[in-house]
Image (cartoon, rainbow, N blue to C red; front, side):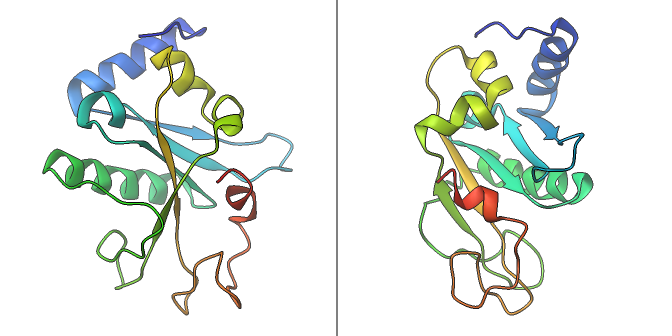
Length: 152
């Protein structure tokens, strides 16, 4: 694995991956100009599946969704991109995974990049508005994922 600049963070990540198969990292902008997001570290290493990043949800909600995804991955489920998928979030809503562009990895997934020390895969998880419209759909009322649309 690569070198993470913060030793305590590196130890926590390694410990969580050993214990749970993955680690959840929450990122926020102290200035409040960028959207908060959370992402997995360890999905690629443990489950041979791209890491997952989710924008615009609270820390606990994002962690719960990523934890549910980790459980699915542990049970052999693999998620496809550009396909509407059910049974990932509650309420019979659909989500969609899209691949993260290469130039966004170090900007948004820097700690994971440090952890892996080599190329890895990552998806953005897009979640719907109350009308089950995704951010790329006309009329979608969820605007907190606009930044996510820029990195796919």
